Amino acid sequence: MKHLLPDLMSLLRTDMSILDSSLSMPSIPSTTGLADAIPLFNTSPYLLIQDDGPSLGYIAVSDVLQEMMHAHRLMEAYFETTLETAGSALTLINEEAKVTYWTSGAEHVFSINKKDIIGKPAADFFPPDRLQSLKTLYTGETVYRKQHQPRPDLFALINARPVHLDGRIVGAVAAEVDITTEIRLHQELLHMTSKVQHLEKAVARLRPDSDPFARIKGSSPVINQCLETIRKISTTSATVLILGESGTGKELFAKAIHDLREPQSAPFIAINCGAIPGSLFESELFGYEKGAFSGADPKGKKGKIELAEGGTLFLDEIGEMPLELQVKLLRVLQEKSYFPVGGTRMKQASCRIIAATNQNLLGMIARNQFREDLYYRLNVINLVIPPLRKRKEDIYELTQTFLQEFSLLYNRHIELVPPEVFKLLFQYDWPGNVRELRNVIERITILTTDGEVKPEYLPDTFIPSMDQAQSILHETEQLHPQPGLESGSSPLPSGKGPSVPIHEGENERSTDTSTLSYQEQLDTYESELLLQYLKDAGGNKRTLARQLGISRATLYNRMKRLGL
Image (cartoon, rainbow, N blue to C red):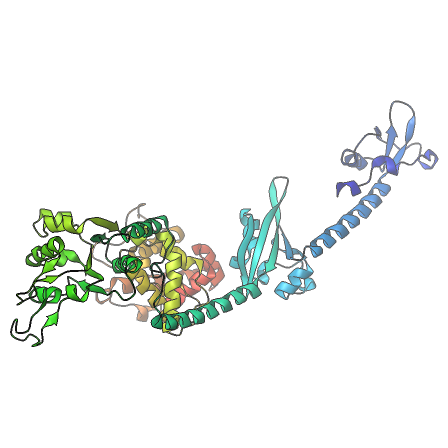
């Protein structure tokens, strides 16, 4: 738009007779630019244009101002038309965080009239912690197509950039596109998808799924490697040993190995070696003939090996199998035959055996708790299932799967899982693996009654009590330093609860800390601390949130949890 500014020679006046001859006028060459000429008008309302020869004429400051005003109006018209044509909600705030420009697109998106907001602080109309333009003004942060929620009922994609002049930020511009309709349509789609999945599950009960890997969720490299190993394993009927921590879903992988090779009619028999008393283990595994022992079924009973004929026998927690049974299982693996309890006729074992354990079998061998020869018979091919902490990229898919499952089970409609919840899920180490994640998702589904999952619905293990205490104590030291308390030292004496400040008139809130749990003492301490800080802030929660370095929403949630 610089071409709209006037050229000095276009404003040249040649009638010198109207000038006062006694007036002192600075002289400038005809090639002088407007920016260099303007400071010279401080000494005279006229500038003489002269090159090597006689004077060419003069320039009047009134002409320059008139042309610059006309150029300014042109640029403003172009600028406003350009912004209105952009089709998005454009806002501009100045250095004082007041709204200086508000397009008709912004009027439509935010339902705020231009004349009602221009010239007023933006924070009077929106929560400061949700106003990206304020963040950009104060921090210089530039964002592009960031999902943004300026109001609880409004979702937008925002671009924001600071306005720089002479090396400092003098304002911020934000362009927002309303995507509330798209978000709601997406939520409706999720809701309908849940209904479809509910129907698919009903159909699946009648028709088994043809995909052997359907129940194994995740696309991380380690999971893809496991699935590739299963494809190779399933080309043979070799014995397989599955290794993995508790809760990783070893039986799912064993079932996938079975389904990939065997026909749908082939049985898959699972037995937990740690859940059967040693005295009953042999009869459970091998079966027994009629009259084999007192109390036995007079007709006899088939063992798990016979029930798995033509299919797969899955021995979970193989490390728990009694030693005396291990040698008999070894015979089955070596000779493919066995005798039922009390039987005299040998039976053939015509099933594939897959074993699994979460124990270190080699360590058990060294302690004479597991037979070495059985280990090598079982370990023809092994499959190592990774723990969840090594495949955290699968947490999102697993979470969505479990949410859909439990939202149907408990008739809950989950509309939103905020990023802060997923952040906590990704930060956690998951000692209980996928089983623990499933339990956590079931918990938060039950607690979510308003459609939005909140961080406080997660178990306490996600925010350890000591971390909470350290956070509160850090805030205490920052806002109210304690004399004599050295950096890094703990204000909690060994074996005692925190020293809770007692205010006049609040003795009824005090409690004998010896009868309270650690968490109750911590909550009492935090309640008193927040009340003290709120009093110091004159009861202004916005001021208190800013002092603590947290959002007002976080402060409200914390006070609600503490019953304040």
